[in-house]
Structures are given as structure tokens and as C-alpha cells.
Image (cartoon, rainbow, N blue to C red; front, side, top):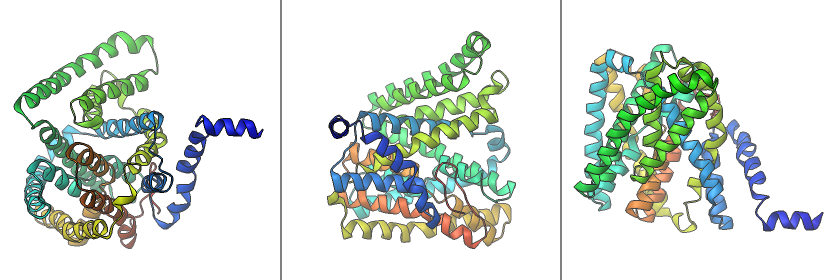
Length: 392
């Protein structure tokens, strides 16, 4: 028996059962003190990297990719263009405010951290972009009114759409040739996806019942790989597929049914912890400095009031809502965990962000994601996240 156990260790076969157990059992203990499973998984990745020097492998990377692709596919499926159009005035005002905040933050980042404008824009996006998948999943188990759920969901989606557009142009704007060719590829994908879905609806779905989930996931992964090759990461392609799919509600009703949404949630809930774990593996022992913690807390103190007040003031004048009611909406939009970690990874790998700012952004992202689970309890708005299990 000892020889069999030794063989498991030598061939790394024991790593995956232990990893699955740690990612799906241990974090549940931390839920009781208000720490989401996503943050627990990320911190376990940090611990594995710092304490054991574990850097992951292709299997962990693949499992993490499935998690992030399915999450942004889910976010794309939630886009409701009719709702956006019917409330376009308020949402347009929200976008204008967001653009102004991003521009101001980017200039401050350029001045304070001595960065060029492209990485500075990504840092600004990291600080203010809400994580739509995280937020929407939390709303399904919150006690917000339907009206507040609508505004939180819609504003997070619109903010993420803006962030994805900016991300694409920032990444591709190194030279005009790269930008133009990448833009052509994206335009081609936008025109091709409806054709692919129509072909599936007419030629495949009638003869392959209950194949919608596999088809949708396959297309999301393929488009994610394409946008990854373009340098804009998997999330852009997966999000586009979700947006395209939900516009075929009449031809493919099963594609956007409650059963499909539930299936994607379950699929995401299994694979997304691997993405957080993999993200934690990017952190090294040298990143833990007092400078990094000071930067993270300093960013939180400087940015948080403006994020909250911007939404509160806008809702006060556009919807005549009380400050207390607006603050609950603004707080629910505060988590930046998923999109933040994606952008931090891009900043480190593509723009070689210095260690102090890299770790500082991680500190900011973790604390910003923890804030709603504690503050909203004071307003008696319990949150429970099916994927990340935020405490009631």
C-alpha cells in the first residue's frame, strides 16, 4: 500500500483529488465569517505558491479556463437589450459618468505611478469595473426588491460592456495594423455567430435533443480561444457568444431557458474555483510588502467614496431616490473580483506591472469584494451567492 501511495505522489495523481477537496470543502468553513469561496480559492492559490512553490500545470489551467469562459457566457446571456433601450437615458448618463471617472483615474494613475496611458487605463478599469457574473448570481439569492435587482443587474452589465470595449482597444492599440486586423476578426465573429446559431437551430437541434448546452459551451470556448489569440483574453469571446445566443429566444427557446441558466450556473460553480486558485498562483512571496498593502488600502480609501457617491448622486437626481436606497445599490455594485483578477493578470503578463502596484491591486480587489457582504447586512439585505457562497 505504501508503494501505491508513493507512486500516486510521484506521478502527481494525488494532487487533483486533494485540490478538489480543498477548493470545495475547506472554503465552506470560511463562509460563516463572510468570506466568499472565490476569495478563499484565490488565497489557497497564493498559499500554494508562497509556501510550496506550486505553480500549477496544464490541467489546472484548463479547468480554470472552463470556469472563466462559462462565467462570462452566463453574463452575456443576461444582457437584455430591450431593458437597456427602454432605460437608455439613465444608463447613458451612467456611462458618461463612468467614462469621466475612468479618464480622471487614468490620469491620476499616470501621474502617481508613472505608467503610460495604456496600462493606466487598465488599472483604472480594475478599480471601478463591477464583476457582473458575481453580482448577478448574488442577486438571485438576495432580498432586494425587483426594481433594485433590475438596476443593479443592468448597470453592472452596461459597465462591463464598456469595460470590454475599452479593454479590446487598449490591448490592440499598440499599432494600427494589429488593431485593424483584430477589429476585422471581431466584426467577422459578430456576423458569423447568428449564422452558426441558425444552422444549429435548423439542422442539428431537431435531431439532437438536449444538445444546446454542449453546443453553447463549445462555441463559447472556440470564440474565447480566438479572442485569447487576439490578446483580449477568453472573456470577450465568451461574452459575445452569450449575447448572440440570448437573441435567438424564438428559434432556440431551450438555449435561454431557466434549465439552461441553471445548468450553466452549476457548471460554473464547479470550475470557477480553479480559475481563482490559478490566479492566486501568480502571486510570489516577494509581492508581500508593506508598500503593496499600503497601495491597496490607499487605493481603496481614495476610490471607494467616489464610486459610491457617483452612483448615489446620479440616482438621486435621475430617479429621485433617497440616499439610503441608492447606497444599497452602489454597494451591491462594488465587487470587482473576477474582472479585476483578469485585468491584473493581463497587467502583469503583458505590461509587466511593478510588484508593488500588482499586489496592491490584489489587496484592493479582495477588500472591495468583501465590503458588500458586511455593509449590506447592516441594511438587512442578506446576500447568498450560489457560486461563491457569500454569508447571509
